[in-house]
Image (cartoon, rainbow, N blue to C red; front, side, top):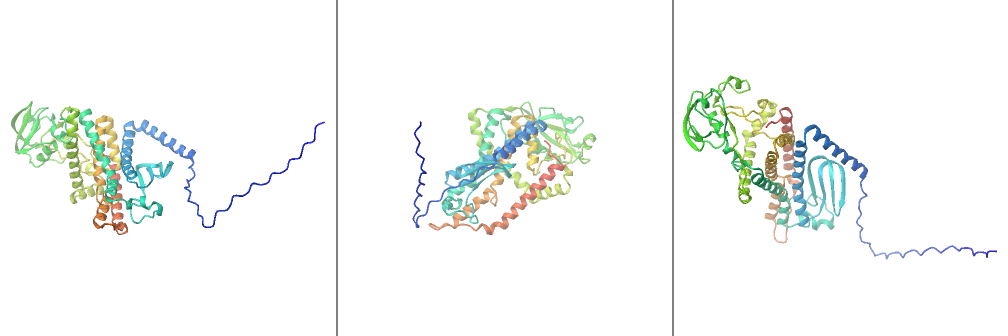
Length: 457
């Protein structure tokens, strides 16, 4: 027989922990938002990847590469703000690629990183960028507005600075690796030579041949082919114009009797009786610089290209430039409806993109076309885009980075030792709205022109 077992007794409940004293306050606990639905985010990312592959197969990989390069360029811009803000001790709560609905994100420390649906840029959110933003008291010391003037100026200028840094790198690669006409990007246009001579034209009568270079026309020095075209426009049919030509390193003088544009070219849109010389240009052979020479030339070349970009922006935003742009919009680009031709000196047909503001659509279209012709031309495209975007971001008006810099400088001037001054951004909001609406109008009209009259090379 087995011995009877003792019945089990229930255990007493564990004692409850003592209640905290009434005057005790537990420290706040950092709460992390629950993770997103990563299955849905993964589907969005998979769709985006599939769309990218489909776009590459359908429209060409040069288009995908151009779009990716533009996104990378803008991402580097925001990375400049982010890295310098973190270095300066500021709190950055968001870093996103794109805008609109969120596709995917992850929290790393105090910053949320992610991707949004519309790949039109990127942004980083730094707390306390102005006096209107509410910031938690414990985060106020790390807000942008509480930092020193040098730190604030560094953070806002770091974004535009990345574009000029990228430009310097691209210029060096073009000079040392790819090679450019005459070994110079800024002065490459001055290295042109005659590519073709139209039969029975003024140039043919003057004895010009392929490989020649016109260095003087009617007593005026000629540097670029555009210079020559402008000088020919100022002449009249029947004028006897002296020229100085370089052939195989030797100079000689000749005279051209300016004639009218041939009928077969008039049918392409030129006005009857247009002064016409009859030559087409080609670039000089590409030359590569040594590494040391390229390093020395890169800052100078970048500076000259930047100055040309400043001049181009000044021409566009001048009264005559804006009037011309408005005429293009009102006429639907009809005055530029002909595709760009290989120019012949004396023609009034200009490249339809001259003086024209391109939308992101038009710029990417040109970049993709250049990419199909070679990687060096695509780099040249990104060089121009970086310089123009960098310059535009330096405009001293909000919401540009230059506007934040202008506010920081104004606050520094108004501040006194121990009494920092903070500008009231609310007073600037009407100007901010006006600038924003101006950008919207320019962007939409440029996009309209690029749709009805797509830019061509």
